[in-house]
Structures are given as C-alpha cells and as structure tokens.
Length: 473
Image 1 (cartoon, rainbow, N blue to C red):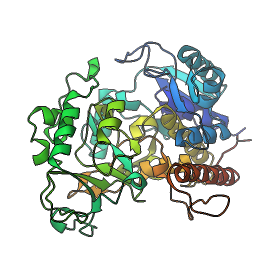
Image 2: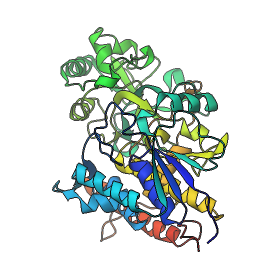
Image 3: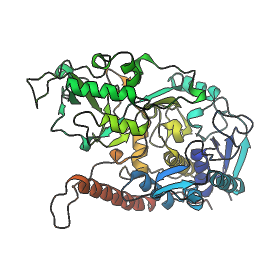
Image 4: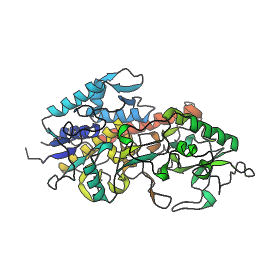
C-alpha cells in the first residue's frame, strides 16, 4: 500500500475523537495529541478521551421534531463513533439520549487506542504546529491552552481568543407576534445593507416595564465557575439583570430605550420602553434580542422574556449567557471545508469553531475528519447540503450569519443546532384534507417536513463520490 502521511489532530475531546475516528476509518493514519494527564485543565477529572465535563445528556433523540435528534440520526448514518458509544452506554432519560459518562469515555478511549491507524500522543501543543505537520485539525475546545490560543490569535490578527462570551437570546422569527410588534429602525435610519426597517420592535408600557424589572431583579441567576472568576464583564455587554440592579431606569436608557420609534399599531401612545430584535442569520429565520445578554438561569429566561409583548409565545433558538469561551470568528477566518484561509494546512473542529454542545462539537469533528481524509486521499471535498442538520451547522460556522452589525462589530456567536438554521421549506405543510395548518400543528408539521427533507438529502449526499471517503487500497 502506498505510504500515506498522518494527519495530526490536537485535542482528545468529542470533536477530536470523532475527527480521528472518521479520518482513520477512511484509511488515513492519525496522530491524536491530548495534553491530559500531563497537563490538567480546570474542569477535566480523568485522562480519558471524550470526557463529558458538564451534563451527561446529548439532549433530545427525536429525529422527527427536534434538530438535535436529527443531527444524531445524520451522524449515525455516517458511522459516528461518538453516537455509537453514546447509544451503547445510554441510561434512562425519557426522550433524551443520556449516557453513563465513565463508560462512554472509556469506550471511546478504547476504540481510539485500539484502532490500527491511530496513535495517541500525550503532551501539550502550546504553539502553532511545526511546518512538517502539513495537515492538522485543531479541536482544543473552549479551554484552548494560552500558548496555542495566543499563537492562533497572532496568526489570524484576531487578538486574544479567551474572553467572556456575551450571548443574547435568539428567537425564531415565526414565533414573534407581529400583530403587536413591527419593523422599524431607530429614526428610520438605514444602516449598511438596511432598509430603514431592519429591527423588530416590541413596546412596553410603564406597568409592563416595571413588572419586567421586578422579574429581572428577582430571577435566579447562574454563578461563574471557579476558573471564570477573574475575567471581568465588558462594559458594553453587561447582563440585563446587572443593568437593572444599577437602577430601575438603566435599561430604558440602554437597550430598551424607546426613542426614535413609533408603534404603527398604536401611533398616538408613546411607548415607555422598547425591546429591539435584529436579524441574526442570512435566511431571516432568527432574530437576536439586542443587548439582552444575561446570566439568568434558562427556565427563568424563558419565563421572564415571555413577559415582553409580542414574545408571549416566543420560541428560543438559543438562550442567553455569559461565560469564558475560546472560539474563532469562523465565517471570516475559515473556508467551507473548515480550513484556515491564511494557512490551509490548519483545520478547526468542535467548539473552537463556534458551535455549542456535545453533539454539535462531535458533528463538526466528523466533518473535519472526512474533509481532511478526502483531501489527503486526493479526492474532491463535497460539503453536506445546507438542508441537512450537518450542512446547516457548517453553513452557520462558515458564513451563514450576517457579517456586519452596527458599523462593523462582530456578529458571529456560538450556536446549538436548531431548525432556524435550515433553509425554509419551499411550501408550507398542509393537513391531510389540504387545509392550512395553524398553531402547534403547523409548527410540528414544519419540523417533520424539515427533518424528512434533511435525511433524504443526506442520503443523496452520502452517495456522492466526494462525501464519504473510503479506505485507500
């Protein structure tokens, strides 16, 4: 057999382990670099690969009505090691896929260690990989070592990558009540590429505003973990509850200021406060709550944010948070095959690319491994269709967002897989009798249709020569 040079993968978490497996299964040797146990992290407890440091849940396994369950199904069809071991070590969790964390990690470690084409190299990579590593996947996650993070920042010009990631909630556009909300930019000003009606606005009267402030102040908040304690807030991204603590009128003079806007549903009454939502993806299916980063617990967020008029039935693609994170401005820096544009020998996978969640990280590791193997074998690289869960997540990471907001500030934020990332259906699903569906029935039918389309399109992609590299002869 012709000698094939190895692909180096840095990081033995879910993304790195999945990337290593996919690469090796295609017949390409792998050297998997994992710094534990020689170098510890603030959160890992073992030296095992794919250690689950937070929850033991892979979330919903419903492949028809949940985008997470759909990406599970897609990964299973592509021979995912993470999904295979997750299924093998499942513990009862209703409709979710939860796993025995120790059994799962042990099984992934054993599979990687016993693969004839994978070598595990224990030790930290604290700088850019040496030039003779001509194909590298960096899957170091949100706790990338300071040395490597600094080297990546210097190479890309993006500066330090470790910071508090201020995340505002994102709402599905079709769950906003437009009989109460309206489109308008402040003072009807059209920004770059805008029309002067670029924001969705939700008005509150004084009573509604005061009740909202009371709820914010009383709401249960999450606490920073030990390793996050010394990273301060940026003044420009204070949590809304911290602003409320500084004075009941603070939000009215900040992200909820009502000036320059007129409610066409009630034009003679001046709003006491207004919440604005800004388009968050190129498809126009997701809208970001402007300035609403928060440390409220997830259940509290849903309850309190639904107190805002027009958001009473809001469905959230992502809830807010502020935490230490390390991720790239991937749409600017990476190409469609997850390669660094300024140095294509470097690929990235997992949370460092700007995805959130165990399965999302593993999914991007799966794609990175396949892309790297296909490239090494001299085969054309074909990305999965954007209509699939894998393709829509890849598209979000590599260019599906809106590049510029507010005069050029970075808009890219980490994201879990959700149906808001998928291209809309060509036609809305209808009832068996041909009548239009409404309410919950319409939402469920839409999810079923998106999932069916995704799996059909994935099967078509799998059959393409560039999609699934096979072992070299």
